Length: 62
Image (cartoon, rainbow, N blue to C red):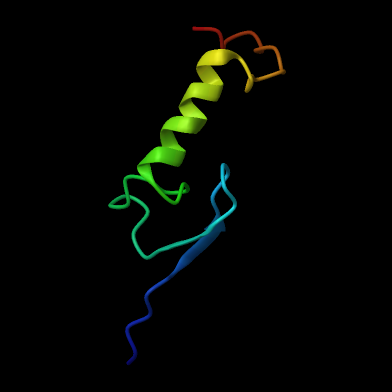
């Protein structure tokens, strides 16, 4: 029986570089290609460039 390893592929949300990993939990930067891109994205959240537009339903606000 063959051991199948799933490979997760995506594009970095910041620089669009190809990103691959076999273990999402162990890859601290996934879905980003690097620590730098991860922090660029975090900075965009802090500046308000990213935001969640939907309002919370009752019960979700807690």
